[in-house]
Image (cartoon, rainbow, N blue to C red; front, side, top):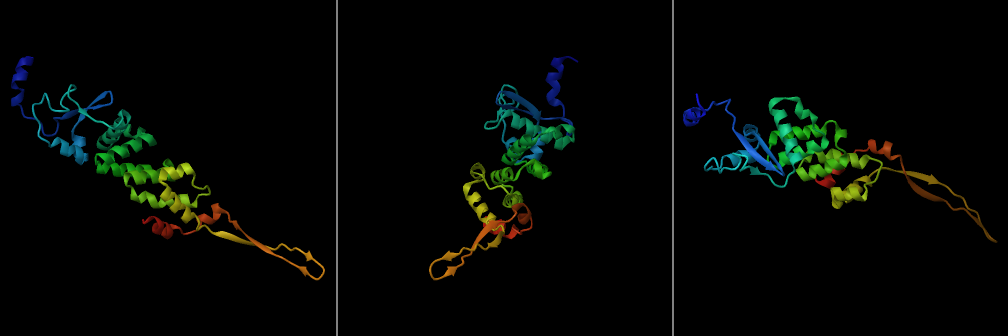
Length: 241
């Protein structure tokens, strides 16, 4: 059968309900991406609504050709690559999705939040939370505030309250100085060990001898003491959690 015969009769063929793949072309920075529509449609309410919009002639519809792609602005090519790898892993169960590092998972968190990939976003949150060492407490506070992950705030603030080191200026800038001040008020609840020391001075004059004593407060072992203190109710109260 000649190509011309196929082209003239293709419009009369039915499309298989399962194995006829609709694709869409995106332009991100200087790269074209042509991918199946189905995962985007199934996982994202934003893309689902976009695909429901009325479409004109196929030659002029955005995303139907390399010459007329959907242009995605405000994101990087690497961020979009990370999202697609995670999305295809979730859909097909391949090992490729397991190669993402922490920064790439954060990119997936950003885009899955922005485009309302609810299931993928929940999977990313769970992945970044286990093991806890993958994201440190300061980063967790920053990400939780930026992407509305409320369940991360309490354990992250608790870890910062219990650690020996003070909150630095740079860390305060990252989490917000209001939060840094609130955290400082929580840390003030750390137990102080009262040490009483007697210093005896003899003051001599012509008529009497007097003794003086003084007391001072010193910090206890913050590593040992802080672990045993119940800060959770206080953190909830201060931060409104």
